[in-house]
Image (cartoon, rainbow, N blue to C red; front, side, top):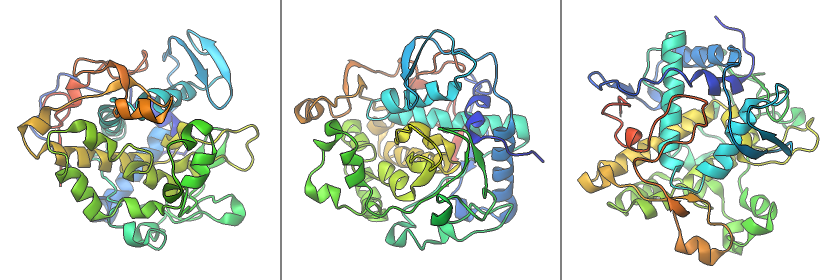
Length: 369
């Protein structure tokens, strides 16, 4: 049994466990969370907590020069000891992963890395679960997803508004997080989150009209909508990727409607905090959510042979204006290809986009149920 420290450390113990040259002879099976029995749920939660309690790896080195949000610090080369290396990683998620061609392959790689760390270090049997939030879309707030208060196997319910929306029950009640400052994990139901998002920046605001601002987040990820996304873009990765990774989309909507740490809101006790998606991976739900995004990509790839191998997208966010965005819907040059390295900056063993294009061969070895 492990004591809980900070979930942020989970990010780093995933880094040295990936076996790039492994052969997929006995794939693990990824199943929806609610199909797991109590022991299976408890085993996943226990492995997450053990990984979270692990100390940071002192050998990790981030290279280059980046602005670290939300603290506004700039660092050259190796980070000073007083700056958590997770901030560098989260900067990468914000500026080089989302709304670029790296979105789908990066998150497929990341969830797999976490799974491998849990298997190799803490005896998790594998088969990373996913969260099929289409089940919850009709009534997200009252969904059964938020009803499991079991202290060993339950994910817990909504946070208490009188306690900064800190989760009060389930196995993650009081789960300690480090970013942007020390605080317990929080979830805050936010039915219409997009107006606040648009108001956060004039650059972002240009991409929203009045209808979009009033959209209910759960209206974007019903089962029939996801099915239409999968079936409606055969072999067209550009438009397929736009569907889960656009301004109002299933991916962002699940983050935003859940609120709290999964939406990157600031803890009440944190000063000079800029909200955003810089610490989404604070929440264990982040990985269940992105396992589902990976399943949607897998379902789309299974449409035909061309879809299975399709890749397109740039490495630069095209946010200057709506015209530029329309020209590069999966982002601007330099363009990425299957030989492009997934961004790691010496934090973990290397992999390419091509390495994760097929999750049943070579580097990856799992199937979805």
